[in-house]
Length: 101
Image 1: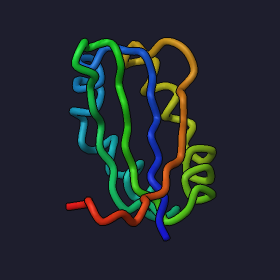
Image 2: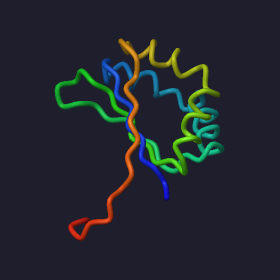
Image 3: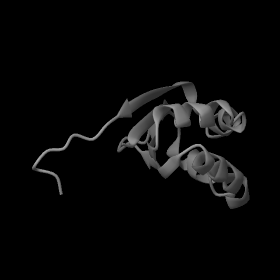
């Protein structure tokens, strides 16, 4: 069963949008993520504009860690986006409940 990863950092979502606008830069990162088991990936901004979050679905938690450790450009991208502090990373598994839709 896949896992869901949530990464949160304090930063400016508009600067993240600028950093992510270079598609060529992201092609190699996304390819590497897929090689390590990424299924879905998306950035989000908090309603107050002070937090950036990444929500991913991965084949395994180990796959995410292998990708993250093999991606030295990610800290540089975070710095360019004005991220302050260390990322907070949590893994989630879906619950099979009758109320889902």
